Amino acid sequence: MGKLDSLDKRIGYTFSNKELQIQSLTHRSASAKNNERLEFLGDSILGFVISKELFQRFPDAQEGQLSRLRASLVKGDTLAKIARELELGNYLQLGSGELKSGGYRRSSILADAFEALIGAVYLDSDIKQAEHFVLQFYNEKLAACDPSKAQKDPKTQLQEILQAEASALPVYTVLKTGGEAHNQTFEVECFIQERNIKQTGTGTSRRKAEQAAASKVLEMISNE
Image 1: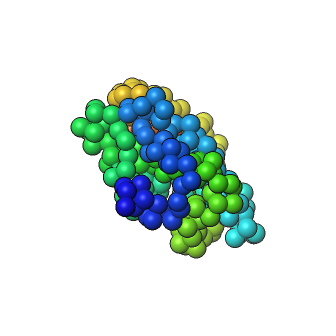
Image 2: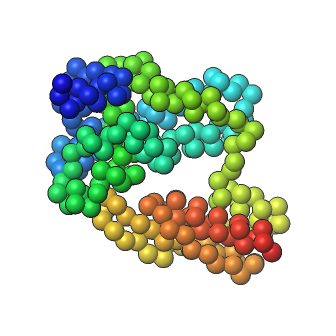
Image 3: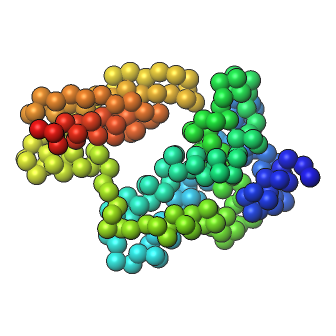
């Protein structure tokens, strides 16, 4: 049994076009023919499948609740966890630099590979098969969802607190960025002028850094 055959068993799907499967697992550090376009496609398919499933499962849930549930299900940490359970890191094709730095363990690379795999399954079959592929990894997570407990993200919580006080909204400023283009880190400041509060947060995207900074501001406000 070849290496990819063992992956077929893990993911519950056998590719007709093995080249698609290989491409979905190829990081851009390894080849110009990599998984970035497949990841773009898989991201859209994942969002659609999860949105459809939440819409059908929770007919009384409001749009905001559904959006927050979807965000928690398709976020990078969730995707990376699924990828680790599938041991996708063992099948990735990485450039020498990424291999040396442990790229096969990096959450962002694993999450992207899982989304690329979704895109590859769709191209290898059809949307029905891609939907089945996604849901086999999400059925338990979907069953555990509760719209009434879908917590708002820190930025939204902070904005609502300030709006209730008729205060000016937070100002978010990128202080610095670092790292390689495929593995950047951002440092963002959240400034509340009327309270003279400044907190910084870091993350692998500007949005994540903003959320981290907002979370620190919320903690300060709750302790006042």
